[in-house]
Each structure stands twice: as C-alpha cells, then as structure tokens.
Length: 303
Image (cartoon, rainbow, N blue to C red):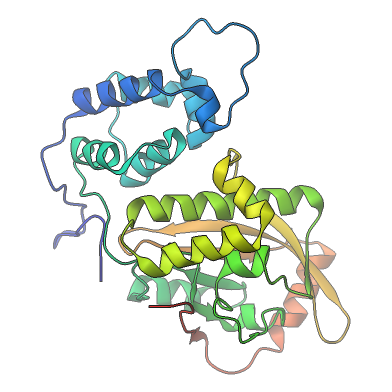
C-alpha cells in the first residue's frame, strides 16, 4: 500500500528530505509568474499589469487564500502535501516541476498505483457514524467501502459496467435514476470530480487503470472532456442531491468530502439540516437499516 507521508511511532508525518520553505516559495512564485492565464482557463480582461497569474488567481484555482499564497511564497508557511498537490494542479505543471515542488516541501511525490486499501481509521469512521450515510473512495474515485446508512438510500445499483463502482463514471456516463441535483449543484459536483481526478493523475501518472478511466470519461462525456481541458475552480467540496427510495419517498442531503490522511482516501458524508423534514426522513430511512455496519465493495475497471 502506498503512503504519501509515512507515519512514525509518535504519529507525526515524516518528511522525506529537509524542508526548504524559502526555496519552495520561490519556486511557486516563478511558476505562478510564468503561467499563461489562458493556459489555466482564465479569461483575460484588458491589459494585465503583472506577469503570469496574480496571487488571488492562483488562490482561487487552488482553493487557497491570496494571503496564504503570499506567506508560502515568502517562506513564512509550510504547505501540507495536499496544498502542494493543489498548487501543482492549479498551475497545470508537468511531472518534473511537481516532483521538485514536492521535494522542496519535504514530501515524496506520489507515484505508482492508486492505493485502495481501507485502513482501520477509515473503517472506524464508517462505523462510528452509523446513522450518517457515508462512503470511502480512493483517489481515482472508486468506491472502496460504504456503511449501512449509505446503502439504505437505495440509489446505487450495480449495472454490470466496467466502471460501475466509480463515482465519476456514474456521474458523467451512467447516471443514477434515483439521484437528482439542481443545475448549480450538478455543476459543482462535476467540477469537484474532475479536479479530484486531475489531482490523482498528477500523483499517480503510471497507474494504467486510472489512465484508462480518464480516457473512457473523456471519450464518453463531452462535459467531462470540457472540464478536463478547462477545469472550473472549486470553491467548496460539497453539493446537495435528492435521493428517492423504493417506497416513493425522498430525502435531500448535502455531501461533504473529507480527506483521510496517510491512505490517500476520501470519505463522503451525507447530512441534512438539523430539525428539518429531510433530517426526519433520513432518520426513518436509516432506522430500517440491517446487516453489517461496513461493506467493502469491489474496485472496478482494468488492472
């Protein structure tokens, strides 16, 4: 199993090389100033007074504040591995620049195969939120495990497709009949998935299954292909959806993505507003759940 930042006996992340915050900041600034705004999907209005991207623009693309970008470039803050990935993805840099940025920040650039093993931490997360629909997915957006509350929503039915357990494939190419979103939420959801997959391909450039998935998505969905060529900035990793059950009832929930450090997995938690009609409906749906608390599902696709 591949781990991005090894954990020592005390539980603290270990860096692979000495950290060089000043050099990391200088490298980010050079890359930012050398990036053509049009190359990262930004429209140019009038005459620009700065080279490349503004700090605000890089921040918007990477999900960071302009002040945090400034502190990084000045060597006054140390980035997490996730921040390094976000900056690399936002600037659309090549593998060599990504490896160098990771090294300057003190991390090993991820490579090899996308890890898909659910560890004890992710398992406990699913178990302890037994009344909250949740699933865990790998970096390629393949479902790894779900809890009983998620199964109670009754919307994820296997289709026999090669990628039937992949969230992106089911969203762009094989939509669920019992899962609906408003246009705004659908747009946010699609942008999130495309951004997640771009980050994954940057970290795991030699994973053939991931490459095959991306190719299949780009061939099978014009929307995904457009997002892949010109990604939309992701403001928040959440969106709402309505789930319809077999009895005809429905519940609208908001999904929030939570990173699981060390394993390069992501958990999605679906919740309703406290005291709302949807919260009451969710309690009824989950209350009828039986069977195991955690269900592991197969990773679809080649390889």
